[in-house]
Length: 115
Image (cartoon, rainbow, N blue to C red; front, side, top):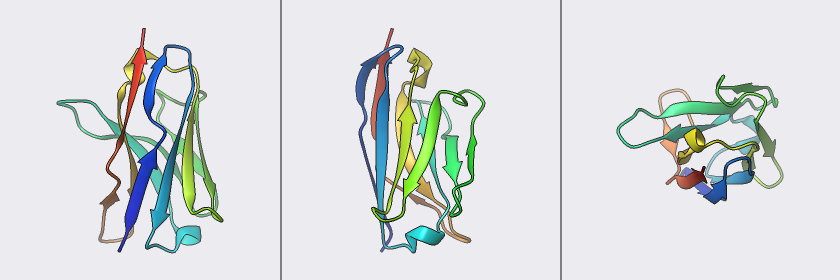
């Protein structure tokens, strides 16, 4: 059974930092590409960053240079280091695993950036 559990969200002032974690189970983690998405009320869920099994990363333009996605295969965990946070980064952040024919999500973690 695939399970993704996010943690690390919270309230932070603009300009601050947070680090999100996503612990995965039920998958061959070292072979998995995973990603972070975010969603605000009434809007679609948008990709923030993705990381391949080999560690290649890609970012949404809105976060490139401020956010860093990484993985620790030994801990079966991916991270999202978020620096220079802005109020527009406020959202629920979700971890995603999308093998062919399936789509798995964590429960989400709220990030709120105050101005």
